[in-house]
Image (cartoon, rainbow, N blue to C red; front, top):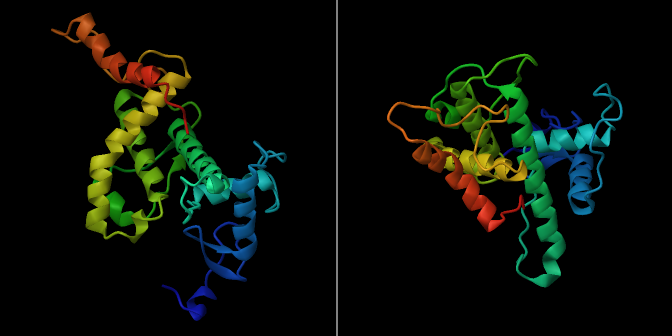
Length: 238
């Protein structure tokens, strides 16, 4: 918990303002950015791209909302979401989670993490600093598997309860959840791309093909089973 004198030394992580600070939606922000985020997730009205080609001011709504998402702002309703009167809250939460998932997907496509940290080191870090990959960087299956796990951990860091856990507990959740979260994301990507098998974004196969002693039938069963199940259930992004 921060005292007022400590807050005075901080700044809003979204717009860098130092006035009217508080922890809003899990992040240290000013009152203006808090209200901006609240309006966007309830109205769902925000530009899908930067009108100024990323060379913009703090007033650019697209970039401002992207900073909210990148810093992990998450609406956590306290109302009973099963109540029909609270559908606006449920809709806002789903929109917020969808934006966080889009951010995870974008990082999978374009970022990497320097180094080879252990799960415990990731849990101890408090947050992850991913960097842009060079446009012409060629990924192999090991690197795809690595960054897929990393962006899943980064996504989990944006859930409000994660940062309140002890490092050991956080490490346990990361260790047992990152793989399944990555598989679910890969399966949904295959479903949305109309593919019958799971692969990485550039088409790299998750399963090594033509392995000695492995029949084509067994190979395809491994490749297609999870994507096929998602297709059968007709699971949507929401």
